[in-house]
Length: 195
Image (cartoon, rainbow, N blue to C red):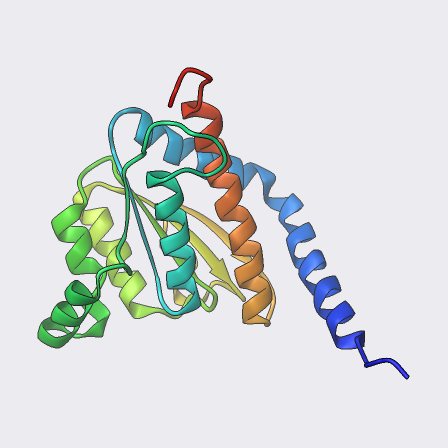
């Protein structure tokens, strides 16, 4: 008798349904891509932030801009604010966990840059503070959220809320959006004569 694999099929079906639901947000994702590409075209940068699994999403997005997504092209300026443990622990120790991203935004961000935040719950106070700091700096803010968006709903200039209760499914949908945003940049900055 074979192993019970129904839970695997259920997980795949749930993930596919969540990702399929992104089709309702094509215009929102397109606008986010336009904002990011527009900033990069004029020499601005992308800052990313998130906590836990969402920190991994933020890291993934920034490294693909700096390295490459699919094709070789010039490196694009992006920094994940979740990447430097010395900055995070210094700021957390001296100012509190709520400030770990906002202090970095204050030091690294400038008008016209884009801050992209990831939160599956929308409850992260440190991301709220980061958005406030970005707004003060004249930056553009983008939020990829989950559930009902929590307190972060409506805080950013551009937002996408992936409705649902399963954190892992929301993260999977966010990953697809990250790849679509990277693809938008790739279509703009890649050419056959680069690298």
